[in-house]
Image (cartoon, rainbow, N blue to C red):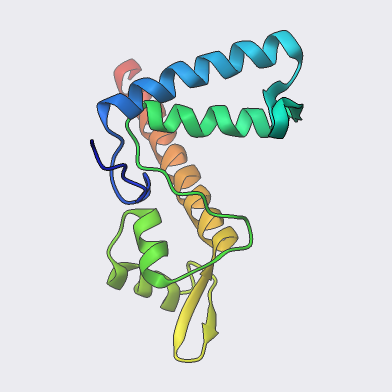
Length: 150
């Protein structure tokens, strides 16, 4: 008998069986939602439970990440992150994140001697950085076209 790993996909990548299962489940849920305008499952005592479309789409998105082989962590909006959690989410070192905080790039709060980063502030920084990168790439493409024509 194999031991079931309850550690979760926030601590390890999904196994091939989990990837396959998530891909099939995602498709099945999407089809069911398209047919029913929502998702119906059996609740306690077999009574039907209707899952709202927005929740169903969230489930499909989660399963899509697992089906792509990604580790997954659910973080509620309003969450305060440690500097290590915030660094992990940005895929940077904790010292680099600390520099970003000190430089005022990301808002944070002091809790005792520790810094806590609001999830919203971290996502704002990430989106701002992505937009800047896209703008620079657009400028480079435009300059390349101008150079080719000149």
